[in-house]
Length: 346
Ligand SMILES: O=C(O)[C@H]1O[C@H](OP(=O)(O)OP(=O)(O)OC[C@H]2O[C@@H](n3ccc(=O)[nH]c3=O)[C@H](O)[C@@H]2O)[C@H](O)[C@@H](O)[C@@H]1O
Picture 1: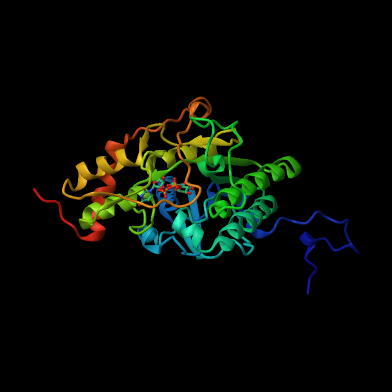
Picture 2: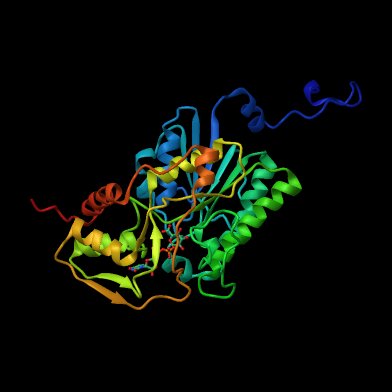
């Protein structure tokens, strides 16, 4: 058999540097951007998939273990030549060739992340390490979706990115908030030590179509309860505040962060701030004025106030949310009506 000269036969010719693998090689000859989204079958992830698939130069690969995500969220892309869906748990390593990684995977609803706290912290720590290892191996840029929960029960209000937070390290929420804090640390250590291109977003409460109906978070709970004619369960005292960002605004911010030149961390959220009683009144008025509002027990370590300072996002990403709560809630109501089969009177 003839010697393969391109591999360099040391007895007859000088050693050649090895060729890149065919997979890496193809990267230089195609202009497509291959983008991995961990947790891409989830609420925010699937909206991000929709937006990225709009660009014909993007190939999108989703990995999800379906703990809270669902194939239903991605059904319109099944079979599309630029789309791939892989059942995979990121606490196990993943070998794949990609150019960018949006690392979203982790349950985000307190009910779900507290259900199996050890798994939640493994996802945040081992999962993030695996994704950083992958980014390092293939030279991909990686974006972590961190959270406003890194500020804990904040003693500064509103919260800007330089605030270090007030977090209980041994509480029932720690698997999530401390998990995300370690994930941020890992991102910056890989950046400093290995020169990785990183982006860190701190996402504040987000809502919109495709949230799980029984997700357990407040907006989805109130809308589902109002549609089912059940009391809206305001957890005491009801004066605690949150700021709610519509999902399409959030996705726009994530893409701007990924495409821009700033590592972050950058807050992405809507600065409109509401008490939970105000939110309940708003949903009641919009969806079903006949339901009652009931005060129920709260859970430990619930942050008493939260509102993003988005100066950095405005300046560095030219981003700010467009949807007010009053604009976004009806869109979510419509989606929940369809899924629950509750028609609108009049
Ligand atoms: O929605 C989100 O984006 C965030 O949701 C959770 O954070 P949290 O603010 O605790 O979200 P909720 O469970 O929706 O609670 C918000 C507030 O509503 C209250 N609540 C919740 C549920 C309910 O039925 N009634 C009610 O009054 C809670 O006591 C809390 O004060 C996650 O921990 C965050 O990481 C995530 O970013």
